[in-house]
Length: 328
Image 1 (cartoon, rainbow, N blue to C red):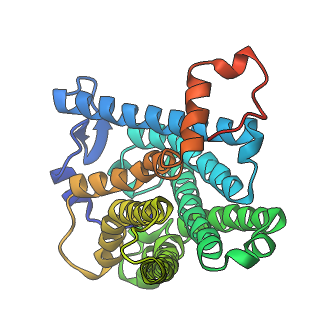
Image 2 (cartoon, helix red, strand yellow; image 1 turned 135 degrees about the vertical axis):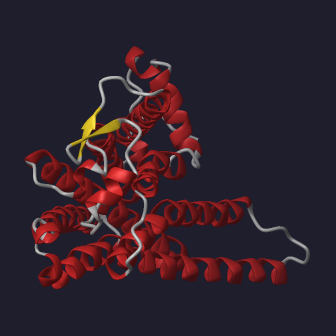
């Protein structure tokens, strides 16, 4: 997400993007890019391709193989759709119109870019939150899991996620449209644009995820002690070790990608020292990289997804009907 930030234009000009030149205090895309600029765009293009391919594999796997038609996987499918759109829409937009260019969204392109970025990134985060809720009931309340998390509940979750995300994106962009020209009179708007958006898009979901995963971790520890008490010296089962490792990776990667940018954004309106544009740009792309990593976290950790990916990449599914194949 890219909520409105208040930065002095002279600071942006002084901290020019490597692919832009200064023309009448405006950043203009250079016709003779430097080596750093070329390497940066090659790297970002590679991230975009990996994001698109990874999430596309997840979508095809869940849609094609009937074994994967479960409520949990439908959440992962919707998450992959949001991350796929990040790779298709947000990545190219962000490569052409850098964060420095769109700090002052006077043009339609920057407004559209902001709405798509905020909405899709928020949608991705909210889906991670819903998946954590799903995992909580699966691990902590297995006897009631099928009644608490069913297809109807998952559909409601998905619709609410997308609805809230779109409204958040539109709200933040509309509120922050004229912040840069109204100076001190717009303090309330600055606070709203830089606080409400991040709270809805990151801090609240992050707190919910932390609480849920902490509860799951405590339950896993309790189960481990129970096993050790009943079976002296018994090792924790592979499933429990794998679940604990997966939860740690999920939460760690999520916080690593999102926390730096949102901490920077929420404190910027209240400090006099401006954050360099290059730093903002780096943190911005770090948040987007989470959409690339999600397929690896939620899919590659499970053997049935890995097998599905192999069958798709090898083209095996085009040689016959494997929809009912058992993925072990």
